[in-house]
Amino acid sequence: MGELNAALKRDPNFVLAYIGLSRAYNSLSENSDDPNPLLDLAKQAAAQAVNRNAHLASAHATPGIVLFSAIGMPYAKIRARLRHSARA
Image 1 (cartoon, rainbow, N blue to C red):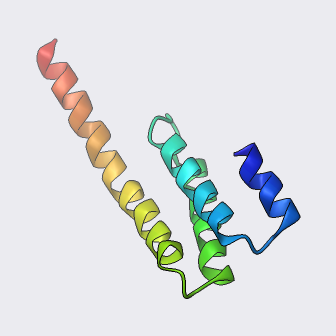
Image 2 (image 1 turned 180 degrees about the vertical axis):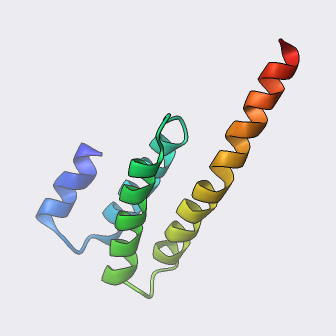
């Protein structure tokens, strides 16, 4: 993530760096006890990607990926806990 931030300092319009940051924050949120702050950062980076280049398909796909994670994550964690408690 440091390299992505460095790339954005050199070129604030580098859309692929915003996409990379969004996906990195999104991935980190999946294993976090409190994913909301990381999902917020992922959403912000995804929004920047769309704002910088609205014609790039991956810029539009990234907010959808973050939204899917935000919706699916609570369900997946609950399901995993239920599976774990059933084994005990």
